[in-house]
Amino acid sequence: MTDRLDGPAAPAAPPRGATRLGPPPRLAIWFLLPGAVLLGAMVIYPIIYSIFRSFYDANGDTFVGVENYASIFSDTSTLTTIRNNLIWVVVAPTLVTAVGLIFAVLTERIRWATAFKLIVFMPMAVSLMASGVIFRLVYEQDPDLGVANAVITSVQDVFDSSTGYPDARPRENDQSPVAVQQGAVVTKQAATPGQAVLIPLVGVKPETLASASAAKTAQPGPGELAGTVWVDFTQGGGGTVNQVDGTEKALAGVTVEAVRDGTVRATATTEADGTFRFAGLAPGDYTVRLPQSNFTAAFNGISWLGPTLITPAIIGAFIWVWAGFSMVLIAAGLAAIPRDALEAARIDGATEWQVFRKITVPLLSPVLLVVFVTMIINTLKVFDLVFVIAPGSVQPQANVIALEMWRVSFGGGGNQGLGSALAILLLLLVLPFMILNIRRFRRDNQ
Image 1 (cartoon, helix red, strand yellow):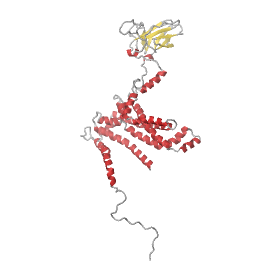
Image 2 (tube, rainbow, N blue to C red):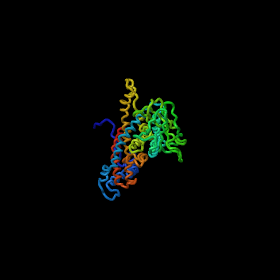
Image 3 (cartoon, rainbow, N blue to C red):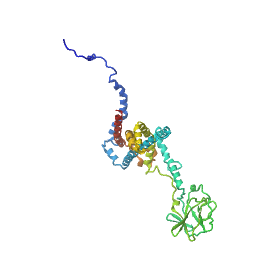
Image 4 (cartoon, one colour):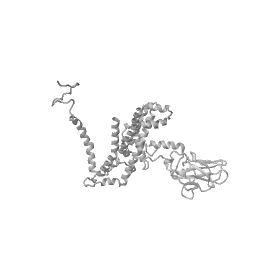
């Protein structure tokens, strides 16, 4: 009699030829095949062909090796492009992430948080091309057209409303009672209190005088030194030189100084009719002077689209577009932070700044890193904003790699060998950040 082991019997092997549960693995190939074909046709093949094409000349007939890559780092304009991209990579992602963090924290403390998020996120619904058109208008030099300069000039006028007449000048002859000395207009003859001084000027453009009042001859009171500053020109001819005629226009808002022994004794400003008055002057001889500041052009805003500020201006437009995206992602991470840690820190006496710096930011670091890396990828690929906002005259100063790649290949350069080399350079710059983002996503999903 043989011993038997207790326990359940091992399952019998399925008979040969029996089918397994579910579809066979090879069936998945047919579902993956369309996507793989599209991926190969739209991604893999263009990359491989661009690498191949980058080793040939502009026409694609002659093999030039790494000559295209060498020209990237030897051409002055291309080096400017690379420098601009470095500025973009350092500045734009940092500012977008910081602004998004600030907005996300503030939305937890305001009553209309949903409306605020909607307004900040709204630029994401606008294409980059349309955003570029919007900011091209915002940055217009003329304050009547550009919103940015309209705001700046309005604020500047609150603190300094002086009017400048850059074209005004005295007549260049011996009969003129005034002359130019070191940029200022001064009277040739000394004046004393109780005397009227005439300061005729010419050269002012008609459009500047469109709203000017008629000039009047000043009548000084007892002990006053008075005078008139006006445009000594009568339209249509006529009038008397160095005399105030009835139709001649006054220069209002002009600063006038009474100078004695090289020292300014009194200062006045011309009225709407061009007259000015000095009261309380001590007896003696005075030189009446119009300082150089009167002949400096009035502040007309900042040249945002000039070669100096064009890159910061475009980065500002980029921040406007992507701040909402950054805010939404960071706000989602902020909502997942345990409130117990924040409340415990406040109970222990931590200030709001300490809670933000030592608890909120460290707990948000994974989200901040994702936003930062995503913005780096977007800045390396930026094209639309630079192409639309930067005028043609300053595009060389605002150029970036993506725009340069298009310009030398299809925008008139006709050198697809160099364009392919720039495309591969851009791919090599973007690739590490894409790999970093993918690894982060995989780590978060595990």
